[in-house]
Each structure stands twice: as structure tokens, then as C-alpha cells.
Length: 403
Ligand code: ADP
Ligand code: MG
Ligand code: MG
Ligand code: MG
Image (cartoon, rainbow, N blue to C red; front, top):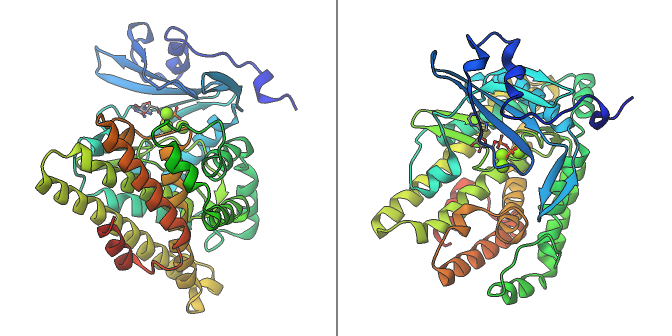
């Protein structure tokens, strides 16, 4: 078999990308398209194609054969484009309203043509700006329950499940997560981004043997627990929102792993925003209202996930899991504990690791930024170490109050 990289791949340009949509006959005249590249350019190109005469538009996302990491280019498999496409398709089978419509995928050129969601805003910037989305928790709870249940052993025939594991091995992107989420931030590794001001605190943080042991156990779970097809990168930069619509994008890290990883990624990004609002919100009264919205969003996410997942087990699950009382319930309790632990790892990684978040990094007052980063590290560590002690959503909501 010829490796993907050696087939007829060419990076698209604003000119050649027109040919990628010509055969779809979606536009009246591809020559008239206005094209711009709107991605952030670290891993992939994202082209926006607009036809002024018809008001129609499409997105073409193409994987690049390398990743730009700390100024250098590292080779990175193009297979992730196919993984992303297949994952979007699988999600569309169960939650078509929560993902972009996909029109076409070209495996050799590693691009996908999809619905333009420019009418939406990326959740991370929307939250930093203090905007509230009342359906967000219910939508992400539904997205996770539906996508994860329908790709788990609770639902699939064991042959189908094992074929799914094989189709979504995604070793190179998993390795990025294994290193950048579970390993590097817990050691003095050169992928970390640590300012001189916060380094003494972080050096202390790395002395915590219990923390490192528990993070390593979570890494082992990530490596070994093939529970369901995950999104794999469900942070607030992978979610598009409007007042009444939620769309999940960018599942190129998809693989069959522990369910709590998706829920934990989402939770961590809510918590990082929660902490950062101390700097972003001008009025104290607004701060409390917004933090209540974030807590409530998490409550709705978890409760929607747990309720739908258990209901699906009961109505569509294999009889071993649907008829014997307690199996699905105990599994959901396990997902809860994992969610807290994975959320803790994600908080740590987004604070001192390679890929940080604007929620914290756009805080202009340097001492405030350092203080909040320390809080993020302490909170992340607490979640990792106490994940078995914070029992249930109400205990968690009390824990948030104390942050
Ligand atoms: P990456 O894998 O490189 O992070 P994303 O899929 O997250 O790529 O897309 C990067 C950016 O491109 C998004 O933050 C968004 O601004 C834009 N984008 C991606 N998909 C769409 C879409 N379907 N509609 C409109 N903009 C999009
Ligand atoms: Mg990006
Ligand atoms: Mg992205
Ligand atoms: Mg991505």
C-alpha cells in the first residue's frame, strides 16, 4: 500500500480550491467565487468560498502533511482528514442538527467540503465576551450521549464495535494527546510554555507525586479503555454557537477511547472560562450571573448526558446491560469520575502546556493572569486527585463555589 503522503496530494490554494467544489454543482459559477483562507493555520487549511450572486457559501477544510509546533514543522499524517470526515458522518446519523452538513470528501487530497457556519461564533470567544447560550448544556449533553452510546458496546454488535476501533485507530493524533495532555505538563518538558513569573509555582507543582501518579493512571485509561468513538478534541474552540444553534466541529482526534475524555474536555474549558471571568467581567454582579450560567451549563450537560445515556441503554441497549439492574448506572458513575480526572488534566495542559487558551492568555493585567493560572493549576490538580471523592453533580457544584 502506498502511504497517504505519497499519493497525489497537493496543498490547495485560494485559486485551486475552486476545482474542489466544481463537481458538486452547488455554485452557479466557480469562477465568480470569492475565496479566503480563514483557518488558524497550524494543522489545516480552512477555505471559505462565497458566491456573491447567489449568496451561497461553502467551507473546504484540508489537512496539511505537517503540523507547525513551536516554530518547527513536524510531519503529521493526512489520515486525520478521513478520520474527521468519517466521524462527522457518524455523528450526523444520530445528531444531524449538532454537526455541519458534509457535502464531499476527497481522501487523496485530504479535504472535506462542508456547510459554512460563519453565521455562528466559536464558543471560546463567545464565552470570553460574556455571552450566554441557554441551549448549550442540553445540546452538548445530547451530542455526547447520542454519539458515545451509539458507538459503544452497550449498543453495537461486538464485530461492528471492533471494526470501528480498527477504522479509527488514529495513532499519531492520539500520541499528541498522550504527550501534550497527560505527560509533558507534569514534567519540565520543553513543549511547555511557562513564563518566568509562574515557573517557581510550577516547579512546586511538579513535586506532587500523588498528582503525577493519578495523571499517569488517567493516561493509562486513555491508552487502554476503548469505550466509544470519541470526538477527541471537544474544547470550546471546537464548538460553534448562535443564540439557538450549537454545532460541533473538528473531530480529527477521533478514536475509540474513554467516554469521560470528551465530557472532561468540555468541562475543563467551561472551568477555565469560569476562572478567567474574574478578569474579563467588569461588574461583580455580572460576574456572579455569568458564573451561574456556566455552572448551570455544566449541570445541564451532565444531567442530559446521564439521563439520555441511561435511557438509551434501557431502550436500545443489549439485554445484558438493559435488563440487569445497575450495570449501566455503575458505568455512568465511572464516567463521572473519569470526567473529573480528564477535566483536571485538560485544565493543567491548557494553562502551562503547548496549546493554551485565550481565556487566560488574553488577560492583560500580568499579576492577575499569573494568579488565575495558579488557580487553574490548583483546581486541575484537585480534580485529578479528588475525582473519586466529588460524588455527583451537586457535590461538584458546591466544589465550584469554593474555587
Ligand atoms: P483546526 O483543526 O485547524 O483547529 P477547525 O476545524 O477547528 O480547524 O477550524 C479552524 C477555524 O476555521 C475555526 O475556528 C473557524 O473559525 C473556521 N471554520 C472551521 N470550520 C468552519 C465551518 N464549517 N464554517 C465556518 N468556519 C469554519
Ligand atoms: Mg485550530
Ligand atoms: Mg480546531
Ligand atoms: Mg483540529
